[in-house]
Image (cartoon, helix red, strand yellow):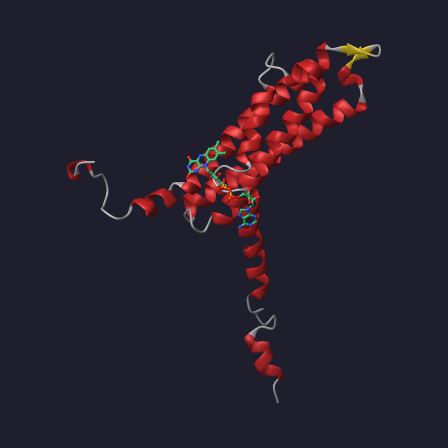
Length: 183
Ligand SMILES: Cc1cc2nc3c(=O)[nH]c(=O)nc-3n(C[C@H](O)[C@H](O)[C@H](O)COP(=O)(O)OP(=O)(O)OC[C@H]3O[C@@H](n4cnc5c(N)ncnc54)[C@H](O)[C@@H]3O)c2cc1C
């Protein structure tokens, strides 16, 4: 690479690569949530169009529960993604690292869980190339490894929780009251 083609400062390539990891992870989460929405849409289409045992699959309580659970999980993941993005904008990527780590784990889990339910509802078609579900599942599954495996992100979240407890606990009594009670 000719020196004239250098962009940015010499020797800061690694720092730049590290700095892009936070925003990159949130992008993964946004894609995972969008893909999860598509899996849920397909799940509902299948549940309302396929008849078995005298009625549509959506009449089965377990299927209705899968649909509802999928909506709840998507909304929880969406809100945590928005929180992580808001923190990145307001306090910076470094201080938002716990939320970024958390949502990276959550979004991948939600995508695979919802897609797995949708695949089950499609039966054999769900594991074939007739629907995009098997591809979506692979996407979610690889997201548990790409940009750091789940275990490493969970370690970040755990460290922050432990650090909170390690902090010195502030005196609950106001300074004035404490002074007044002293002999
Ligand atoms: C589709 C895909 C695209 C990728 N794209 C990129 C890319 O663009 N740029 C890039 O740099 N990398 C990329 N990667 C690499 C990815 O970041 C690594 O695969 C990932 O960080 C895991 O590293 P590893 O494969 O070396 O596995 P290892 O480091 O050997 O980890 C294997 C397993 O060990 C466990 N483990 C590892 N560390 C810990 C720990 N500290 N605590 C507990 N358990 C642990 C986890 O279960 C982990 O899954 C990509 C990977 C895939 C699958």
